[in-house]
Length: 252
Image (cartoon, rainbow, N blue to C red; front, top):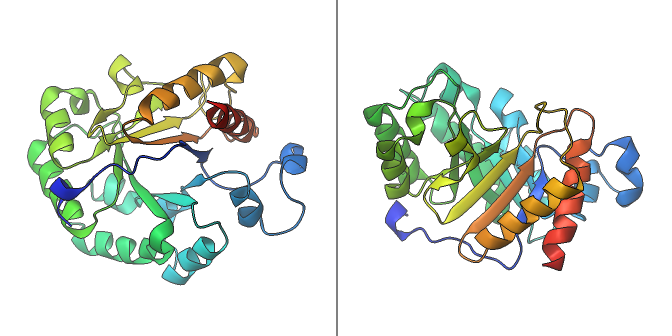
């Protein structure tokens, strides 16, 4: 399906979860006692981000098994492999992308957005970006969120290209520059990736920030498919924050 036909999947709730479905021991009482980690996770959250796909491929049958372990309204965001984003740097990766899409397609209707995370050294080049995202759009009609880390991706030309191809730009924390804290590109998808601040992967957000995050999600979800993924997983804070924000989101 062409990008121009893509419409935001607006729902009454935000999709809130963690980068990965491991359950920290301290949070075991917050989840069912029986079932796999994913089954227990899926009973509390409505979304997860698969990061392991960035490092290694998974069989299509593995994705299918994961999809069968969660409720029908659960969705998986899947991170595009680093062989495409960091090694090939979006060039000449058509075969690798087709293989990845076929594998992740095992999730069926539980497949949510694809996450395209780019290295900080990757400057915006309109020809490279246009060729890659145009090809991706021709092959995949679902949501796509791009998390760039170079300042060039926050210039108007990049924003226009992403919007035209219905690619969202991630709102990240901590942000490498002020614009990176705000969502951009196509407004039909809002995707927050919260890595923990001031220390990435280590710091919790705490009650005050949790309320701020929930308010931002509430404002966005009226017009966009809204995701919030906590990646401050090192000490289990991501689960704490995600549970709290999901509770606040359900109450709003």
